[in-house]
Length: 96
Image 1 (cartoon, rainbow, N blue to C red):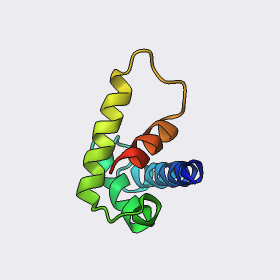
Image 2: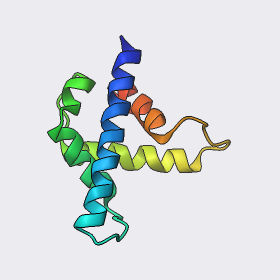
Image 3: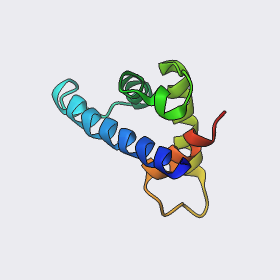
């Protein structure tokens, strides 16, 4: 079911967010990681996002999708009320 897939994608994005927060704190000494989409993408690929999407996806391809999705979310007017993880999970699930 699509709802289950979106929920699983949301959960994986939230897991990546938490792990990235640790990475920023421990590896980057609290400095904001401007290349976060690439980090999230590598994490998500390593943790099975391909099986959730039902297709193979490279970290580079996913980083581009995350960047485009985030930029679209930031430009949306009015801003969606859903968490960013929901918005991006829905967008990723809709990609061919």
